[in-house]
Structures are given as C-alpha cells and as structure tokens.
Image (cartoon, rainbow, N blue to C red):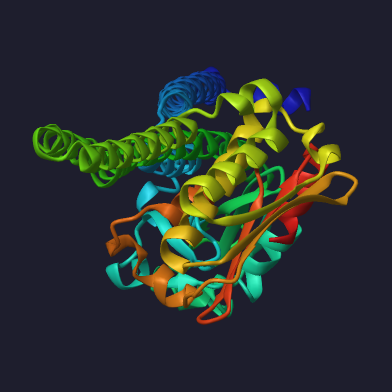
Length: 468
C-alpha cells in the first residue's frame, strides 16, 4: 500500500483530494438547504395552525355572539309573552320563541313547522281542536279541525305529557296536515294547567331525531310559560266579556225597570190623577157618587203603593241583608200572592243557608226571583215550587218547578240571541257565579223544571267540573 501511494504523482493526489472536498462540500450544502427547508416548512405549518386557531376563535366568537343575540331575542319574546294580555299575541309569541330557540346556522327557521292547536272556550259546543296560530301551514291546513280521538293528539291530551314522533305524516289526525308530509320528526306538548287543558303546541322538522333532549327541554319550558300566559289572557278576556255582559244586564235591568214603571205605577198614577179630577167634578153634582169614586181612588193608590214596594223589594230586598235567604224567599212569596195572586211554595233548608256566604245567598235569591218571574209572566203557572236542599255533605240543590205552559228548550235556546229578554242568560251567568251547574227541563203543556247544583266546598267544585 505505501508503494502504491508513493507511486502516485502529486497532481493525481491533489485531484483526488479536490474531488473528496467537492463531494464533502456538496453534502454539507445539501444538508444545510435540507435543514433550512425543514425549518421553513415547520414554521409554515405552525403559521397554518395558528391561522386555523384564529379562524376557529373568530368562528367561536361569532357563534357566541349569534347565540347571545338569539337568546336576547328569546328573552324579549319571553318578556312580551309574560306581559301581554292579548290572547292572539300570546300564541304568536309562543311560536316565535320556539322557532328562535331551535334556529341555528345549520337549521334555518324556514325548515321548521309549528302550530298551536286549541280547544274553544265552550268545549260542549266546540269539542274539536282548531289552529290558533301557526308557522308554514297552508291555507287548507288552517281550515281543519281535529277531534283528538286518535293518535298523537289523543295520547298527549289524555296522558298530559309531551310526545316525540318520527313519522308524523302517518298519524291518523295530524297526517291530514299537508305541511307535515315532509317532516321526519315532531314534538307535541300539552298546554295544561291543573285540570284545565287548553290545547297543544306542535313543532316539526324534516330532519330525523331533530328534537334532541336540549331542544325538548327548551320547548317544554316555553310551553309551560305559554300555558300561564294563555291562562292569564283567557282570564282577562273572560273578565272583559263578563264586563260587557254585566253592562248588558244593567241595561236590561234599566229597560225592565222602565217597562215595569210604565206598565204599572206610571199608568196607575195617571189613572189616579184622572179619577181625582172626575171625583172633584162629581162632588158638585153627586156627593154620594163622588164618595164611591174616592174609595176607588184610595184602593188604586194602595195597589200602586204595593207595586212600587214590590219593585223596590226586587231592586234591593233589605230583608235578605237583615234576615237571610229563607226570610227573603218567604217575603217574596207573600208579595207575589198579595200583588199577583201567584202561589209560590217555598221550602228552604236552613242547614244549607247556614253554609252559604251572604253574597251567595243573594245570587241564589236572584236566580229564584228570575225563575219565578219567568213562570209568572210567560208560563201562566198556577203553582211554583221552590226548594233548596242538601243532597250531599258538600253539595246543595236548588229546585224550581212550575205547572205552567212549558216550552221547547232547544228551539228557544237556538233563537235566544234574537230575543229581547235576557232571562235565561241571567240564570246561566248567576249559576256560574256560584260555580254551579244549571239544568233546564221543560215540556210544552206540562211545565218547567229548573235545577241548579251548588257546590259548598272547593272539592265539590272540582267534582262538578270533572263530571260536566
């Protein structure tokens, strides 16, 4: 090996050394650029990750702002819902709250279907559910009503709990709603407060299993608040209607008083004036005839006084305030016999009267008076039996029966709004003041039988309401 090395000349050796240096230098440069590229690539990736984190942070902030804005909208709607007493506005606000609460960027509002279905105030004449408010329903849908005898509606109302359905288009009743044909999930919540059910609120969406537990919890809260607001709005509406009815009753009372004054005391006073004038002229010609005429005038004046006293008794029976219901009914019977020769046969159980507050005694007295006057004026009844008895420990029964002409209850009730009298309406409204139940049974040629069930305790009130 040393011989080989020594045999190489200096030029060849220098060439080999130069080649090795070139190869080593190229390797170092390649390593340097490779290291630099890797470092630059690492920095680029770090920048990309930083930019991604910034974008995520911005998106999160935007989502938070969107959620906060949506929650502010829901809060404002909730405030409007709790503050308004306008019935229709309550229904619209309840749906708007639900729509806002369920709306996200991935689930726009225009995919949701929503509706409030309500029972009418008078469930006896209108037992079906109708659309009180809605979103994205067709005009044909809005004209439909639902008996709630099958499917989701029946189950929700009977059980009193919310129901989730994955196939609302197959429901026997809700399946008739065209807007629900494209929906794959539905959530139905009862609008119930205590024993009173006002209806249901329904939300539907095309996405299966759209109503996850968070959605359902929010909608349950909205429905509970909506029930309270609906109840308040209905109470306010009922008060407004009651105010109107009271004004009508007062107006009818004034008209009745005017008619009674015109047909009774006014005519009698005019007759007295004419007969006094006639008696004065008779005194100049025939004093005996004048004395007879003065006797007739005296009788007429006494009869007129009785009529006026009866009217005053009707307007305000002082004996009711001082001695109670039994004495007031007895006094009314005596006055009816004296003034109109009307036979009233009262039988008032004192055990019932002792359980009644004075205001309720007054309401019962006016029910009796209304029924008796109707029998006297329209039925030409010879006898009118008035009974108040205890049929259960906490339930009384007012029973008024006459042997007069009678009438067809259905035909009279159907045309009653076109009649001039409010007698039957007065009976119903005063029965409602007692939380009672009114039943009128009459047969032409036989007579009329009026019964009013009067609860004496809150438990009895609940039993009566549940049995109606």
